[in-house]
Image 1 (cartoon, helix red, strand yellow):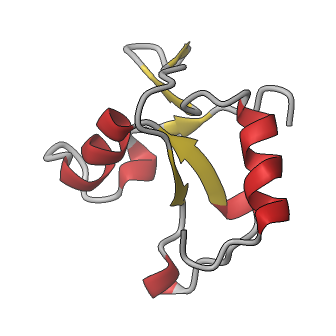
Image 2 (cartoon, rainbow, N blue to C red):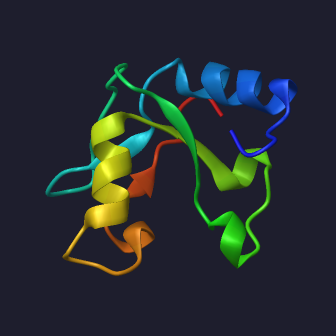
Length: 88
C-alpha cells in the first residue's frame, strides 16, 4: 500500500471500523459502510505530493475506489465525495 506503515494502516482500520469511509448520497449524509474489497486510498494523490499520513488516507471499498477514479461528473473526486471521520 505505497509504503504506508503498519501503525498508520492499523489506525486507519480502527478509525474506519473496517468499513468504507466514503460519504455519498443526495444530501451527503449516507456513509457507504461497505466491508468488501477495502483498500487505503490517498485523498491527495502521492503523484501530486500527497503524504502517507492519517489526514490524507481513507479506507474505501472497491466500488467507491472505482467511482473515485472513473467519475464523469467531476474531475476532482473530493468535490463529489466526502470523508467520514466517525470516531476519528
